[in-house]
Amino acid sequence: MAAENGGANGVPPTTTDASASSSLPSVIAGWFSEISPLWPGEAHSLKVEKVLFQGKSDYQDVVVFQSATYGKVLVLDGVIQLTERDECAYQEMIAHLPLCSIPSPKKVLVIGGGDGGVLREVARHSSVETIEICEIDKMVVEVSKEFFPDVAIGFNDPRVTVHIGDGIDFLKAVPEGKFDAIIVDSSDPIGPAQKLFEKPFFESLAKALRPGGVICTQAESIWLHMQIIEDIAANCRQVFKGSINYAWTTVPTYPSGVIGFMLCSTEGPPVDFKHPVNPIDADENIGKSRRPLKFYNSEIHTAAFCLPSFAKKALDPKP
Image (cartoon, rainbow, N blue to C red; front, side, top):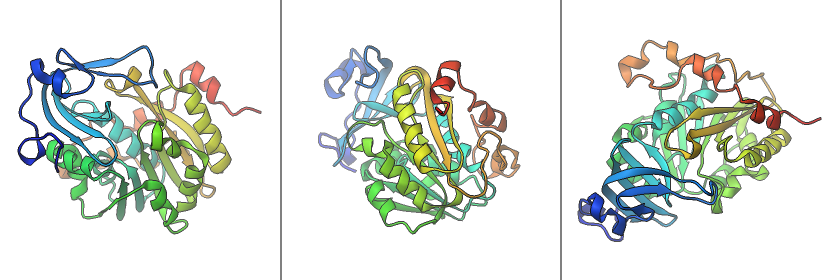
C-alpha cells in the first residue's frame, strides 16, 4: 500500500488538528466536512485528531483519519464510507435484511464492500458455503485491513474468494442462476457508480440469481434522494418479478443520518422481506464464535420496512 505523499509504509506522519487542513481536503481548522452536490446546502462535520493515511488509487482519493468522537474514519473522494462507531448499523442491515429473508442461503456475492464489513456479516450465516466479493479498488481492501481490522476480518473467512475488478464486467461472466443472494455495497450514483443504479445492471443481477434469489443494494436517503429512490424502484419493478421493498436504517455519519436499501427477489419461491424466516440473532453460537451483533435483530428487521408517510406514498406502485 503506497501513498503519493506518504511516510514509511505509505502512511503520512502523524497530523495534528493544527496541520490537518493543509493535508486533507475539506478540512478547515481541524474539522472534516462532507460536502457534495447530492446534498446541497448542508454538510456534516467531524473533528480530526490525526490523519492516519492519505493515498490516491487508480480510482479515487483514499483517506483515513482519527476522529474525536467516532473513532477511525474511512473517506473516499471526500465522502465518509464508514466510522468505527456506527459502521455496524449499515453493515449488519445490508447483509442480514436479505440473508435472513430466505432459508439457508448458500452462495452469496458481494459487489463493492472493499472494507470487508459485509463479508464479516455474511460469514455469520452457517448455511453459507461460498462468499465471493468483487471490489474495484485494491487500495480500499489494503487500507481497511491495516486500519480497520475489526471490519476487514471478513476477508479472513475461508469461504471468501476475492476478485479485484469492475463489478459490472464480473457479473457478465457469472453463470445464470449461480447465487442465492447478491449484496451491492455501492457508493453514491456519481460518475462510474451511476451504472450501478440503472436497469441494465439490475438485469445482470437478476440473471445471476436462482429462482427466489434476493438482492439488497444501497439505495440512498429518503430525506435527500426520493427521486433517485423512485427511479431505482421503477427499474427494479421492470426487472424483478418477485418481491420489491425499501428498508432504511439510521447511520449518524451518513448524510441526513439515514440510509436505505432496495430489496428484490426473482420469480420463484416467494420472499417476504418484512418477516425474517432465518433469524440470525436466535443462533446461540454466533456470540461464541465472533463478536455479538450490535445493531440488527429480528424486531428491527421488520421495523426497517415501516416508512414515513411521504416515502410510502412516493414508493407505492402507481396504477
